[in-house]
Length: 253
Ligand code: IPE
Ligand code: IPE
Ligand code: MG
Image 1 (cartoon, helix red, strand yellow):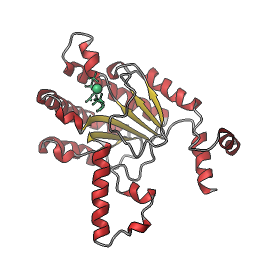
Image 2 (cartoon, rainbow, N blue to C red; image 1 turned 135 degrees about the vertical axis):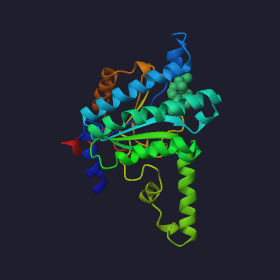
Image 3 (cartoon, protein in one colour; image 1 turned 90 degrees about the vertical axis):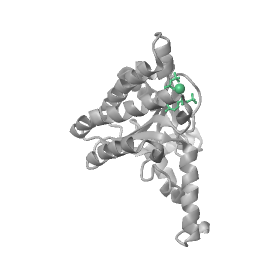
Image 4 (cartoon, protein in one colour; image 1 turned 135 degrees about the horizontal axis):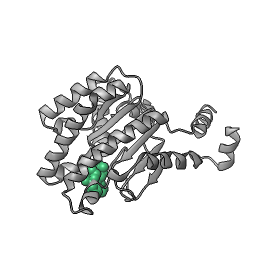
């Protein structure tokens, strides 16, 4: 019965607590205009600022943005360098505004792979916003779900070996403690821009019951109205978590 009660709470929430976004289509946006792919990444940064503001105003508690995947390290070196440079520059530039808007920045991913200086600069921004209590902006950087899950398994294995963890006692909640997103609610809504119907190694554990919204719009074109459309679409969904529609509507009353 306890879990039924929590379904009721989630089903009746009209604003998603946690929105995760696969920000895709920067390259195609630029190429369609005869520009270099990097021009799309530059414009994509503006969209990040806009959507962060919008999510905060809408009352979203967590916004997780997929900025750079583990697989993106395999892109041409010049594009990787541009992206790293842009991400760190943008975060540094925006940090005073993040603080002003009470936004707490968090980074998830294998940041050890980043150049040391970039990582240090980024971590400084994370520290500077650590006391903020408004929206939590989670940047998935050098992130992939398989990296996260493999790391979790390695850590669990070592805790089992040292006697800190009893394998028989492992539950969903135990696994959650070993994830990079520990302590955060799972995404209620997963948005992907750029039209592709795939999840590209993003938050595979956490999106088990997320509502998925794919838009054809490329990320640099994604507007506040588009974000609000996604929230409105979310509001119309019936989240059943494996139950029947009747069970959900009766526990909603
Ligand atoms: C998303 O845009 C940004 C990153 C993956 C870093 P892309 O660069 O993937 O743009 P498309 O998908 O090629 O258009
Ligand atoms: C997903 O976009 C990763 C990010 C948005 C950072 P990709 O462009 O890397 O995904 P695929 O290659 O189309 O699956
Ligand atoms: Mg892409």
